[in-house]
Length: 281
Image 1 (spheres, one colour):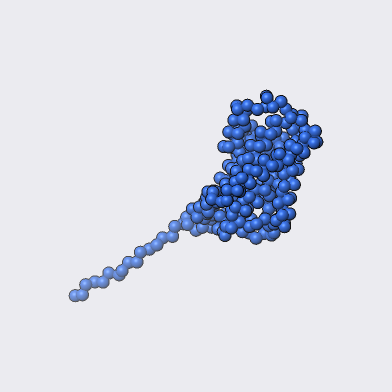
Image 2: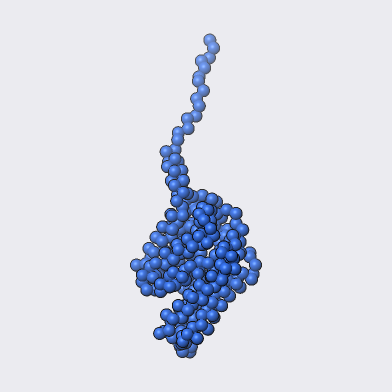
């Protein structure tokens, strides 16, 4: 009698019910990642308002970008943003330019302000080691430079990748998002309306210029933003209190003039960075 043949069993592959859901969720996040980023950046940065005496968490845009990229493309997307955040090897002159442009802005603002009647405070009481450390140390850890991995490293590249229009339109959209992020500071009276509108847009232009000219290096515009804050906090303390509003207005006008000069020199568009792919792809 021939042995009974036992039918070969083929392994049964049970579908993981969670995978399709995750795939659909990731696809939806990919389609709307720009919106998700903006909402996350606002939520993370604004959530500290009740306990921060009206301050924002500057790390919010960076954390939002990392979370969105992790959800869309995992390590690959996060790695691309990280590569921009650690792109230190650029020409040394750009580090000097990043610092010098904001020192020059304040120098020009002081000269124009003095001509407009801005008075200085008593330098003996305004300057001390303790005062400077009290100004500088918090700005190093909680200054606006920590926004730039989100605004420049992620959002700018995302808007460009969408191909929504001219470089000027992309720049304007990124600047408006930066401006909206500062809304609580405007409502609480921390910054004046002209800085909220024109200061935000001018800063976007100057930092984008630094970012593009260094091939998509985030540390260079971060350094520029840091020195913008350090110089502002230092100089404003040297101006007589009744004249600080006037100096602030002059400063924004000078910064705006520099931004317009950059756009005119670039013939209406900024040089595109040498990076070939946006972090979210």
